[in-house]
Amino acid sequence: MEPKVARLCSAVSRLRRELAAYPAEFPDRGIAEDELAALAAMAAHGIPEVPRLRRSLLLIAGSVGSVSALAGALTDVREAVDVFGGPASG
Image (cartoon, rainbow, N blue to C red; front, side, top):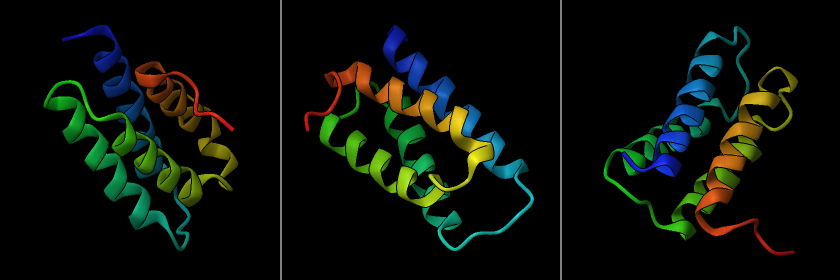
């Protein structure tokens, strides 16, 4: 497995585990879970498309961004996505 794909898999797996263990419900939890599943599937099939990665990242960040307990794992996912196309501009 390519290193950047492995990094994405690891980051997505961490956030999925932490989200599953997070006890409180919040309105967009299902969106985050669905998009994390989509990221995991993309990574499992090789090099994902950067626009699709970024779209999923935005949806996940919008869904869990206010949950401070998930901030570290979310940052790992963002950094793993950035490796595929560099940081998003502006």
